[in-house]
Amino acid sequence: MEIDPFEINFTPLPGSTFTNLFRLFAQNHFRVDAIGIPRALYSLFLSGVMSPLNVWEKIRFDKKVKNTPIEKHPLFIIGHWRSGTTYLHNLLSQNRNFAYPTTFQTVVPAIFIRFEKLIKPIVEASLPPTRPEDNVPLGADLPQEEEYAMGNLCPYSFYNGWCFPRKMEFYYRFVCMEDVSERVINEWKRVYLYYLKKIAFLNPGKQLLLKNPANTGRIKLLLEMFPDAKFIHIYRNPYHVFMSMKRDIEAEMSLYCIQKPKDDETIEREMAKLYLQMMKKYFREKELIPEGDITEVRYEDFISHPFEEIKRIHEELSLPGFEEHKEIFKEYIASQSKIKPHVYKFDEELKEKIYNYWSYTIDKWGYDV
Image 1 (cartoon, helix red, strand yellow):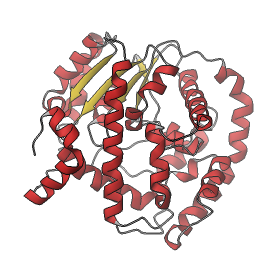
Image 2 (cartoon, one colour):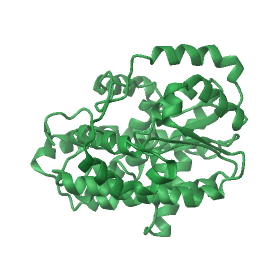
Image 3 (cartoon, rainbow, N blue to C red):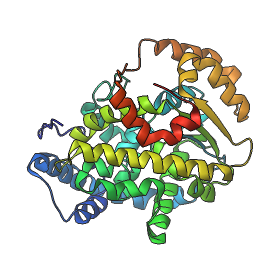
């Protein structure tokens, strides 16, 4: 994995609250490798500069945010990373009945209510036009997964394992929230609810549309918080997810990390282990979701017939707004037609290795290469 230590703009750590950044460094015994020194200094500087703004926004809006009701049950898009969650999120967000976290609101989750005009130009300047792992557009106002925001507000986020890869396994535990204390779970719930209330505060009366692959392993916790929540689970050929996820980790971890990553074999093994743990937990907890509150989407069907699938999703989950937005859906689908999934080649050895890792879902969904 090639790492440019002076590529500092893309690491998510500068948007962290200073308190959270200190906790993350403390969890890692303040270990920063040579390749991560510029990113660590950059993160500490920006986080420190924004710290008074964090305090000001908290004082000014804390009571209003806490009193903000989430009037409509959230709609959660779940599914493992690289399974089409982003395209589905972006397409559904064309329905103006929904509100969603933007990239800006996940990068600086503590100060986006009051200081958007001041901070957003800095965020926009640091973002590349497309994501590093593919050619999907990236912009400050586009929908984004709130796992990034959680990583900047508390130490219990999947992506912290890419910033601090020496403790990757430790941070991966917070996807399924197994083998963690009740105190951690309660803190995660509190921070998550507060963040979602901030989004709701800026979008009164709208239903929250939330996309977070890590939530695939947290169904029970989400239902404890939102008993009437609705879910869309999108799944993809595990052979292709495996290859795409490896590319994703290599592209993004090299931009996030402030420690030297572990060897490729360890990274692959932990990736495969988390996938299996997450999917098994999803299928166990899926049974807790009331009938009519979840729909399944096969990635290959969605890519082939996105308009028909988005219509079906609205119908099965009784979501408002399809008819009034159907032309907007069509326009957005047409605008994405030039984006093509990466094509992978498999020899028998690679195919066998992936099957040995993930036969559970390969057999359950009936996939081949």
